[in-house]
Image 1: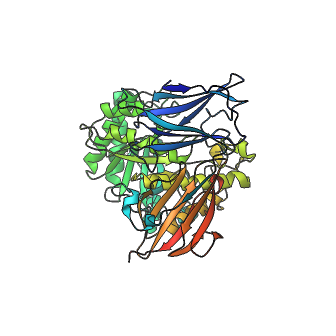
Image 2 (image 1 turned 90 degrees about the vertical axis):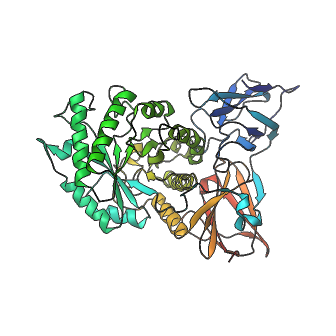
Image 3 (image 1 turned 135 degrees about the horizontal axis):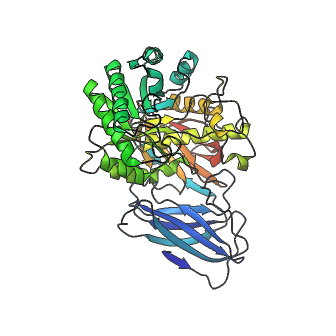
Length: 531
């Protein structure tokens, strides 16, 4: 416990009550608000200080915690709902997000108990004109199209590839299976040649995942020296075959999980396979881009072990930042991940998001009373998909791969059958419509930065084009309403998540728009007044 406060007498809370406080802390710190009520229940409300607008955690940040927020699955499974009865005490706890010493201090101020988490704010007019009001975009983060990829499982369907291209994806990630390629010591790449030719025709790239085990080489995964050497030969043959085709490589998939590295993950075993494979690839193609296998969720400990054991042949570290939290929470993980990759021994590896998505049926669906085929579940996936893409873009990750393109089955209550942007019959889901809208809106626009000094949970990203500026605006606060007011000078139009026009309230000089977390991003277009 960092600090605790006990009022002279218990404090009643409203049904939609919220707690507000100002905090400043180091990125490696995870904080939680602890509330004890008069029924002797203690409830834990975790939160992060690092945000899209405060990526280093160096600035004071207002935290707004809706105490009853459960309706949309906003919090992780630790969120317990609103207190029962009156509040007896409020405390703040701190823990390290990653094994190691914590540097710096935690500062907090202005603790308040509010009747609700509803907010109203006025967008500063200079947010459209001046970079000084922005948390500026990271280097090389201007364009969305160059970093957006999608996973596929079916390799020979041109309809799927057309859908991916038309949605704005520039890269396809697919398994290149060792057991399928190597037969009796010979290597056959026919199905992958056909896929790559189809991608070339659509001006798209490929990220091959070299996996998994081979029945002729010790099974799954390769551990013995002979089996590791056999996998390296497979990697070298693959790189030789695809040399000059603008292909990137990922070595294995989620090696930190029992599912893909049975019976138990071992970082040193995996690092030996990674090193041997990356060196083999570069013998065949010195210019090839190689990434470590994407780790399931954000596993800082396993990644550190890989980095310490790995050689210098890889260009990037892969992560799969799945979470039962809002997509924007990835902002708190990125500084620590990059800190590992910027050590002198690593010479600044890139960080690639090689797989991440939200299913239309998952943990939040019970709150929405829907399944993967329901209107509620599919709308929810669309909201989270756009927020995920915008978060990855604003953080400057060179690659963000959505999982996946098409549903893997037709079971409405199996999460693995509901991650697709298309259903099992190639029909658009709302998430595909929303992604297509985002890539269309942002086409020919560069990301300039996130508007600072907005209320907690509100995000305003500025996209600059040659003749216009677009603000992507949304709230991640559940069970709350945000009201945005802005001057209409230069305003052209407002559209919703699916590109449909929005009607605004207000008068001639000022407009007003209501933001709900369940509605996702809206796009406000303005003429470029700097021309």
